[in-house]
Structures are given as C-alpha cells and as structure tokens.
Image (tube, rainbow, N blue to C red; front, side):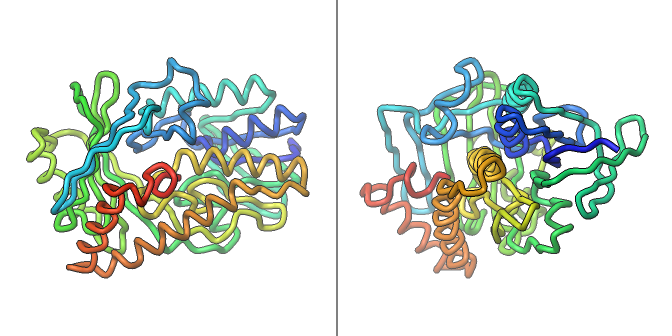
Amino acid sequence: MNRFDVAIIGGGPAGLSCAAALAAAGVKVVLLERKKNIGSKVCAGGITWHGLIRQVPADLIQRTFPEQHIFSNWQRIRFKKPDPIIATVNRKELGRWMMEKAVRSGAEIRTGCYVREIAHRTLTAVNEHCSAFTLSFDQLVGADGSTSLVRRFLGIPAEKIGVGINYQVEGAYEQMEWHLNTSLFGSGYAWIFPHRQSISIGAYATRGTMNPDRLKASLITWAATRGFDVANTPTRAEFINYDFRGYQFGTTWLAGDAAGLASGLTGEGINPAIVSGNEIARKIIDPGHRAESIAGMAAKHRKHAKIVELAARGGLRCTLLTETLVLLLRLKIVDFQQELSM
C-alpha cells in the first residue's frame, strides 16, 4: 500500500494550489483527479485583479477589462478603474499551468482515478485501466467540488446550491456585461464574458429560487435579445456549493467548492478555491498558522449569503434589493472589487 503524508481528492484550482504548496515544503503528497484531463469545468473564466490576475503568467490571460457594464431592470451603469477589474482565462490552460507547477514542486498527480471509498486514513480508488488500488495518508484534503465525496464522508450536508449554465460561442465582443434581470433570473444574473476568440454567455441563480430548466430557458430568451442565438448550441451546467460550514475537521480538510466557499451572490469560485487550497497547505505545514485569508473570505461569504437570502423571497422585494445594490454601485458607496468579488 502506498503511503502519503497528504492525499488530495480533486484536481481543480483548490487541489492543485494545495498540492503545489505542500510539495514545495517537502510534504509527500498525492492528488487524485477523476477526469483524465485537468482543467475542464463549466465556468465563465473570470478572475479578479485583487485575486488572480497578478499571479498567473501574462500569456494565460485571454482578455482584460478595466471597465464593467451592469444592467438591471431600471438602471444601466458603467464603471472603470485604472487596473483591470476582471480578466478572463481558459480553465483548461489555467489547470494545465497549475498542474505543471504542482508536478515541478514534487507533487504526484494521478488523473483518471475515481475514488470509490474513504475510510480512516485510507482510500480505495479505480484508475483509468479499471484497476483498483488503495493508499494511506496522514491527512486528507477534499477539493472535489460541489458534490464532494469527502464532504459526504464527513457527514456534512450541502443545502445551499447555485446553478451555473454556460454557452461558449465563437466570435468577438468588446465589453464585459452583467445583467440583473429579476424577472428572468430572480436573484441571479446573466453574463457576457469575452475571451480571445470566443464569448462566454451564461447565467447563474440559486437552485432554491429557480430550477435549472427554467434558468436555461430564461438564458436562451435573454441571449436572443443580445444578438446571440444559442438555442441549438451545446450547453454545459454545473452546481455551485455555497454552503460553507468550515474547512478543518481534524485531519480532514475541505477546500474551494467542496467547502462551499464559492459566493452565493455571484457564483465566483476560482479565487476562493486557490486561496483556501494555499491556506490549508500552510495550516498542514504549520498548525499554528491562523489562515486569516480564509477568515476574511468567510466573512464576505456570509454577507453575500445574507443578500441571497433576502433576495430569494422574490417578487418586488428582490427587484428593490437588486436596484438598491446597483444604485449603491453607481454612487460608489459599494465598491465592486472590495464588496462583491471574492
């Protein structure tokens, strides 16, 4: 039986950042990813200036946007800053870069491995050749997304779930847009995020306020009003867990979507995933580390969840809350980067 200091389940940004940081410190770490290829996920690909833009190589950046356009039922606002507010990346390219960094640091990455069972400090998995194997570990990190097996192993439910639907269409578009149409998307929104040679067109809403079928129908209807016929375009959807209940449970840890650290308000999850992965690695290396970045993120997460809870009551209340938020952005009382992005 192979033995590791740390086993990580999940090869997204949370797991890869954790693996790289641990391996760089000399920790013997293995990462198991269910998919054969690292990086693929339903995602608009947006990263923020205060989060990732300054941390990834320039050639990974698809487009940068110092200007944001927000549309609501009653308002349209545009705000601009000297530095890019949001940039777009290709998730596959980001994943490959993060994997290469983890491997260079000394992490063992195994793709095409489906974890079948977790027990006390052991797990059993099946590789791409359908061969079962068992390995042991001192610590376990669940970075396996919104339907996390590790979270289920811990007996922690995930009740606050969002839904993201995305179409990636060929073409060019100049500006980044957010559409807060409460009649179509409830407390959620639709987006247009341009990439180099394609455009991410999608929508996000909490599952408690809008089921995925209705969200998809609303997205198709809305996209047509913006000049995009996506009715016959392949679509991809993903659940987004924002039910955060902690990240450390003895020698078992939850990072990123597995921990529920994505924003319930916007669905943003890349930066929370990487921050939590790094902080968990630092806590494993040094148990006295205070992980203040996660604490600050959790505080913002609670604010976002409260807004979602109020907006989820629907109707005029949701519309008034949305319009108030947009007005506060217009008046610069609320700062987009400081208050709305994770």
